[in-house]
Image (cartoon, rainbow, N blue to C red; front, top):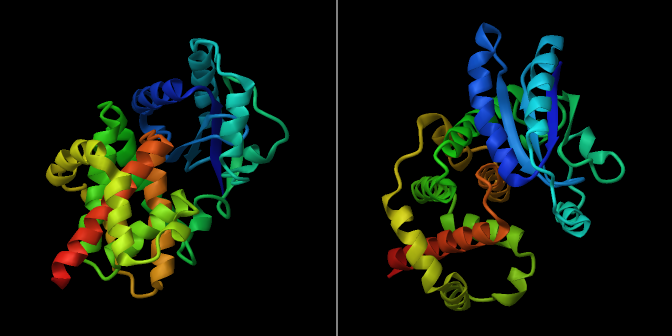
Length: 292
């Protein structure tokens, strides 16, 4: 069985505008529906929006193609330099999400491509032995939550709400929260492990790295964030409480989920680093309080 994949090559603001249009198109599709199960901004071959739909049918291809072409015709010319586009492509470090990401050269700006997407590809390959249907159900729940957050244009608040919910699940589960947040931070900052060698140096480094400005901005949202809806919250709980996965594998799976959400909410690399370091600092403080 193949799914329908779409890459739409346009700037970040047009990607967000497209996703808001997609919500209205799904209602216009009527009983047949368009059944979106994943979206993700990505930069391979140039900044674009990767979308995955549950059914690959001639009707859906025609429905989407007509609307995407009209949408792109109304987009302003992309004035970013070739150097900027190539820099963002290189930042993927060879990672690809679909066959279209493996094509040679950079993609044409304000263009799109439709393609069949195999169940063995992303995101099912993240599942570590989980059934394909389970992985897709999980990313679909997460993607629908993220898509609804984009309607409010409070993307950073939504991102902090998500991470705070993850933190609460970690604090009440068997996966030590400080272990996970350190794992996530090291994925964002590969040289971090070389800088920090003791628990005392971790606390000192985090205090400086987070900084008072970021701490004052993040704390109100972190402390007063609302509970996550049941469907995405269940995805987090299933990972945290799993008795099958080792700690390292739980960290990997949780990282993939959180990276997906933060990218769906169009959080910049610098914003992601600030949020993850703040979460790590909170977990280290909580651990010290429990010990003392």
